[in-house]
Amino acid sequence: MSLQTLFGLEGRVALVTGANSGIGREIALALAMAGAAVVLVARRREPLAEAQREIELVGGRAMVLPCDLSDRVALGECAREAGRAFGEPDILVSAAGMNPRKPMAEISEADWDATVKLNLDAPFFLAQKLAPAMLARGWGRIINIASLQSVRAFTNGAPYGATKGGIMQLTRAQAEAWSRHGVNANAIAPGFFPTALTAPVVNDPQKWQANAERTFIGRNGELADLRGTAIFLASRASDYVTGQTIFVDGGFSAG
Image 1 (cartoon, helix red, strand yellow):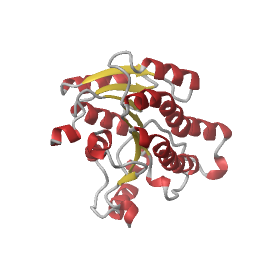
Image 2 (spheres, rainbow, N blue to C red; image 1 turned 60 degrees about the vertical axis):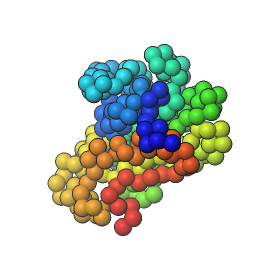
Image 3 (tube, rainbow, N blue to C red; image 1 turned 135 degrees about the vertical axis):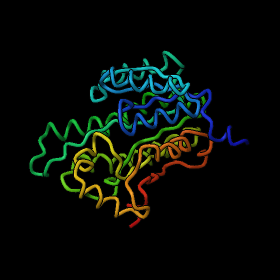
Image 4 (cartoon, rainbow, N blue to C red; image 1 turned 120 degrees about the vertical axis):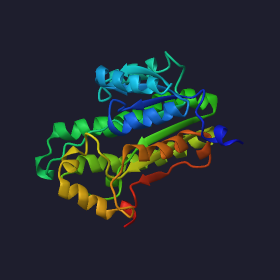
């Protein structure tokens, strides 16, 4: 098998949530550069349109699909519309997320519910709705976005950490259910990257530098550092990899 066959995504269709910014947008771009047609999903249309233009500038194909992923009715409609432009998705990347960043005692029921709906419910139900078409074809890839908080606690991160711990276990459960039928499920756990979710840390030079010093490599992540892992997990190269969470964190979690 050639390297192009192993890592290329020509003829594949990927749906990426949270594709309007940050990690989701970077992974969508990487998959498009590898040859996949990409369905870009998030709540707001204009940032998605910007991501679509970025993909088209590098010769890729993308479709904008606005959706409030915390609304289960809207999520179902999104799943039904996902195959309209390019065919049913072969690859699902669940990157949309939120982090209220409040002390434990100040987390409201609304904070908790909103975080669980977006960070954990949406990856579960969207995969549940898209997997049957993948199973019928005998090939598919589920890529969830986990976190350092999947395995350790950070200050003011209880709802986020709880959902990201759940993502790690959900990934294992999806792998157990579907891998025998050709649909592998894995997760990427990023370290500290400059995104909207990490802005409170990025904007604090002391904290940002302290996190860089905790890594083995000596720096925090750049979004392009995620491209290779995403392409690997989306392609034939990962045929015998499933149920795993790969930490892309410069060694932070190994220290």
